[in-house]
Image (cartoon, rainbow, N blue to C red):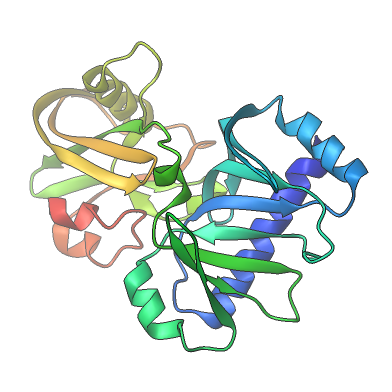
Length: 271
């Protein structure tokens, strides 16, 4: 298991480095990872390990794709789709990672770059970036893998709280978003309503008891995640948060928020 997780992390790390070196798509989140097994023994070991972590959602002649029960945190965001590829003498690389981005824009900029190769499939196309100094490849698809596989959407509940002209923001501590500012938000738990999750997350992340006023909207974060944002007001409490989970919680005026490193761009639409 440890070798499998280390290999996934390595592929994302190196693919991110490759992406950042040859494109301007620095904040692109990872969507999918494929491990290129180097021999039959490794293929058997990785398959046995990943079968305990998730279920098969795609079967191809080259291997199986798994949707993981729990996300793997990487330097390029949370990962839940992993393929274990059968050994292939034509694929000596360690693997590749697929990143979500503005594909038409990327294709326009890089399709004539010799480091990029256009790959056309029946249901999608992608640009694959490679370099001889890297033993991984980086891919960008016009249709995210999770869309092709009809992966269920994960709901997140968030709150927009404004008082005396200022908005409360939380500073992330998790490695994939370290130092970035966000509205109070978190995953909706099993058998929990989205509204109850919003109230709970506000309390856990800020210390405030709140009352929901209205639903502002639903904002897609990725093909598999969307956040439901509610306008809310404070009923009671004071700033109190878990320092193991967050770096800081502060009130900011809208003009100050414009200058902050934000975790999600949709926050600008709320101001």
